[in-house]
Image 1 (cartoon, rainbow, N blue to C red):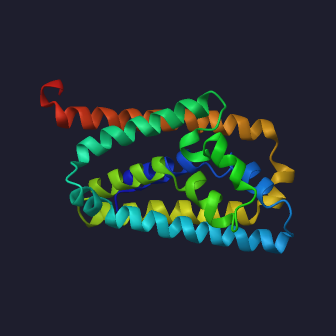
Image 2: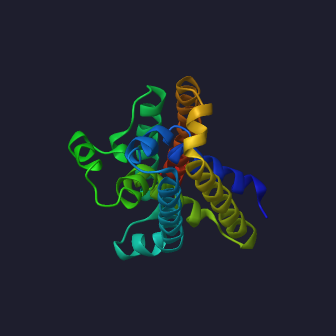
Length: 210
């Protein structure tokens, strides 16, 4: 197994979805629930995100082919999206790409099932997450990298589920300062991932740059 590739997939998913920084959002949207119902919601969120990740990884290239899109063009667009999310995180703000616009946020509290909308989609499984998964799935050539892709996804999904299930306890342990620092640190990592995507796509589209 390509452990470096698995680590890259895990780091990208952690940086984009950032379970620690999204804890306050999860807790605020489930504040009227008991702890047992919060745990059920956490399981539903995790399951929805897992299904979305698997579909993105398995069907992403086929969807691009259906629309006649080249993966290098998509990698460039995805890199720009991820970079914008990273810049928002570095400034300590929430990206509208994943957190929703002002109009969308107004509908969050009245959603019929917050586990699916907005927690799973778009807060966790948004355009940035889907873009990264499609790109990494395309790069997963050969058994070693395919195994690494699955291992990186599985490791993150287990961490996400554990974090959300333990959210009431973690909220009493993790201070807002730690969440703020984590968001900015993940923003730096995500910016580096975005630049890697952009440079790789530009080299493929303009071979003279290499």
